[in-house]
Image (tube, rainbow over all chains, first blue to last red; front, side):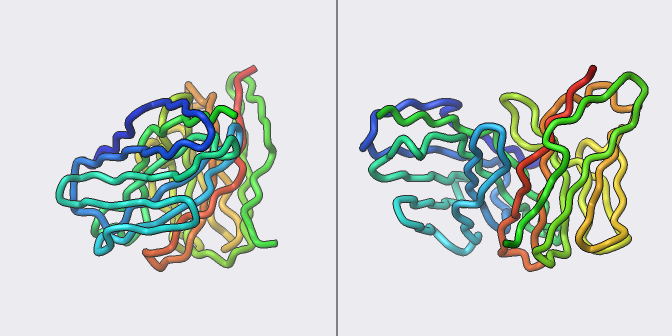
Length: 114
Length: 113
C-alpha cells in the first residue's frame, strides 16, 4: 500500500531564505506527483505536477524535483516571502490509477518570518 | 469565473441526524472527489465519481453516501452511522485526462452539537 511522508512537519525561516520541503513515497510505480498549497481554513491550490517521466518542474520561485527510484520529491522555494506561509502537501497518483486517485502526505507547515 | 463551490462553510450536526454537504463545479469536469481532513493529517478519500450516475467508495466510505445525478453536482451525506464526523471536508474535481491536477473547493467544516 502506497504511503506518503513529508518531513519536516513544520518549518520556520526568515524572509529571503531559500528552503527545501521533502516528500517520500514507498511505491515507485507512480503516474505523477503533485504539490499543493493550503492556506488556513481553505482548500488546496495546485502548485506543480510532475509526470513520472519527468525529473523536475518549475513555476516562478518554485521548483519541484522527482526521483522515482529513491521514492523522493523535493519542493524548492527561492527567496521566501511571508506570503509563502501555508501548509504544503504532496500527493502521488499510483500507476494504473485510471481513476485519478491521489494519496496525500500529512503536509509541512511553513512559516516565513518578516 | 470557473471553480468549485462548497456550501455551507460551517455545519453542525445533532445526534442521530443526517446532514448533506453541497459541491458544485462549473469547470465541465467529469471526475469529482470527496476528501476528509483531520487536524495534522493528510486528506483521505471518501468517495469519487468518474462520470454521471456512477461512483466508487474510497478509503473511508463507511457512514457516508453520495449521488451523482448531474455532471456539475456531487453532494455528500454524512449519516448518523458516522460516529466521528467532526472534520474538514473538501470536494475536488478534474478532467479524466490523467496529467491534469485536481481543483479544490474551500471546504466545509462539520462539527457535532
